[in-house]
Amino acid sequence: MEEQKEMDPDLKRFIEQKELKKRLSAIKHKILVLSGKGGVGKSTVAVNMAVLLALQGKKVGLLDIDIHGPNVPKMLGVEGRHISGTEKNLNPYEYMPNLKLMSIAFLLAEPDSAVIWRGPLKMHMIEQFLRDVNWGELDYLVVDAPPGTGDEPLSICQLVPDADGAVIVTTPQEVSVLDVRKCITFCRQVNTPVLGVVENMRGFTCPHCGKEVNLFKSGGGETMAKEMGVTFLGSIPIDPEIVEGGDAGRPIVSLAADSPTKKSFLELVKRIIERTNTVSS
Ligand code: ADP
Image: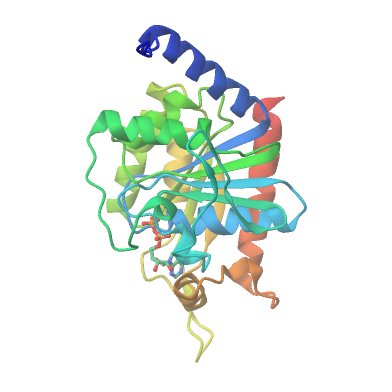
């Protein structure tokens, strides 16, 4: 029997890159959600932004490449779901009519499994999520990247050279803001435009007396954005409903009641849409 010949690696790479380009060309806007460090609400912002865009009638994809902490399915209440398709053509999970979702969590056997991958493998996985997922035509692809400026944010910036840009999430206090400066410098080094900075967890309104308390200070992200010459996209208050909604799989923007927090997400998304329109025009 004739032995099957391995494809020439250069040819294989060439074909893969062409396929990646084709897949990405069907997506109008690509937004990378980054943060200097973990726990500042990056996934929360990515999830609520994607759901709001979908509720506004845009065709949206949400890609969770936080390989070590893929929390997006949990925040949307679709943990443990399985996806269909073939290795070369995976079907993203249809969360709602206009929102397709893909996460490493869908490929793990157990939700608690830890992924121990080295740099090149991570890059390969992220590339597969872009190239081999049947995203179809989208208005927006929102990518929830892992925190920091390591392998994965670098991979995504390299793999999506035509991204509209990064939305960088921070909390107001100086220790967090310091890491965001690094994140902005990183974007400049890899030629990814910065759409702007979001200050999350700014101020908390006491439910008993209605007084505003700045638990994590206030305005640090806004001041830093000015100093670094990047756009300030807005702030989101501390809201226990965000925590409850995140744990219960109900993003706050999908709740019927209008709240100051929902309004701040609406404002944020409005500014991001404006920024993507100016950056790409
Ligand atoms: P990151 O992606 O930066 O690690 P997450 O989005 O996972 O952060 O948020 C970390 C925790 O903080 C979650 O429990 C989330 O519900 C909570 N959280 C995020 N933003 C807010 C907010 N504005 N108010 C209250 N809790 C928040």
